[in-house]
Image 1 (tube, rainbow, N blue to C red):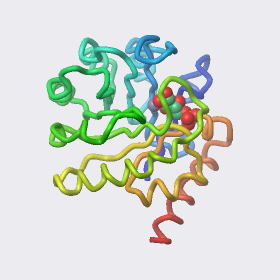
Image 2 (image 1 turned 60 degrees about the vertical axis):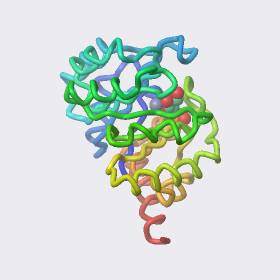
Image 3 (image 1 turned 90 degrees about the horizontal axis):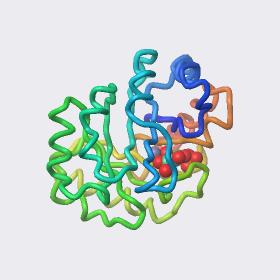
Image 4 (image 1 turned 30 degrees about the horizontal axis):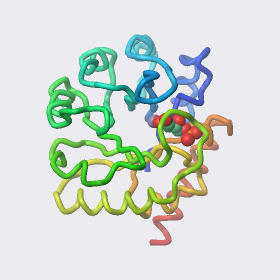
Length: 222
Ligand code: DX5
Ligand code: ZN
């Protein structure tokens, strides 16, 4: 299990220090929620902010684009130093082309699915995926409640990927805390995003351990 803390819940005034604190706590990924005020109601930050912080951090940058027509900005995020770029299936008309372009630019390619979007949206692009992001809340805000139906979706995506011989990671995003972790890991998730249930519970090293213990308990119970 990889924990990818969502910087949406971090202190925006101290992003450099927050990233350092994550690294010092043993975290390896950082989740960047890019919002454009169109695909989702909020506006957060874009490629220039990520690029500035890239210089200060060795973390794996897991970038979640909640923006319309993401294909217009792929090169900007590659230049900013994103390691993984996830676009929403609902936001990209030519998803096949978008995913190929993300890989061509040297990043891992991901697709995020809103809670209402069926698994079948992935069927014809399975070979182009390094990651699938299952949204377990409606995107746009931190601190929302986990939608239980997401578990079933993770199981079905896990089966679909296995059948296709794909090694794409399943990442789950929204409303996740240590209590929720065992069932997510059992269902097939390997990357968990956590915003409010991570940053509101310092120290970060101990919070990471709480998630890791919960994930280990799922494996022991299998
Ligand atoms: C929702 C974002 C998530 C979310 C995670 O639009 O994509 O990354 O903020 O935050 P919590 O864990 O607070 O739901
Ligand atoms: Zn996110």
